[in-house]
Length: 413
Image (cartoon, rainbow, N blue to C red; front, side, top):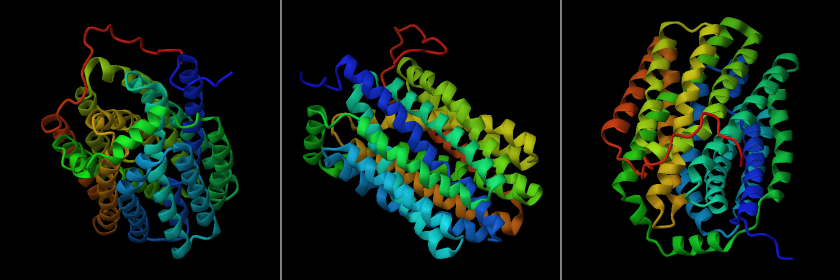
């Protein structure tokens, strides 16, 4: 008997379960990068300027690889192969970080992680569209975010405990080990479908400038710049402050600070995806972005361990909006061209620019003027992102207002 096509109901369901697992495991591996790096390097007596420098190098590498990686994935027949390469890159990056907190290893680790991320994020999104189709992509992206958040939260908790009871270095050993089941799980994904091959051929025949000069895409890219300019360095600053105040307990505090927003994202991402189809993208985008300046202003006033955990709820609100709506908006804008991954690369490049500026300048401002001034700068960037989403970004979806509002906790595949 011939295997079921992934876009049939049963095939889509099994492919959806495979995507749930892939998102869970990929996010688990990614948990070792980010705030844990700041704690690791701060404990090794790195300055905030040096930490900001290596993080900025990583984001520059991410920027450099975004559009080329998107073009490559659009032309490839197998998204699974792209994901496999990306996961191997994540594993090598984590292993290098575990070798020693010295400049060459840390820089190479950041570069590998950045190139791997530029492949994995759009590849998973493209697979999602191929498996469930564009009509159901809203809820699928919500499920991607949900399972990614669950994986991120559970792995962050485990890594925090490992960092506290064993060593900060063991966090990256665990991240490298988690790459192995992530690679094995790729075998559960369906092979390339005729739909994917058709999209790849259509992408090859679509001029790049048709995508790169789309004013709507450029407007959203501007939103992404200021979103990441506000968001990227926020937990970095909190991690450094908690390390100075709490010593070895910082690993547990940061782990909890990562888990809280992941719980928010896991609970509300599928609902956000469904509401994006009912109400449109813009209103949810503005509401999510508005959480950024509120969070930064609160951190500027006081940053105690208890308040950090409460304010991380706002991180979950902003992360849900950005994580779920970005692929939906990009899919809206690239539907006719077939250049989904190139368009994702453009938005990723814009976000990378914002993140690079955020981590470096936040470190400089924190060293020279204090963390309060750095948080105020991040709040101003978040306010700009919110205003751009409200005043410049058009509605890209077609709200299905005739539909009844979805239940609060939708169930089923």
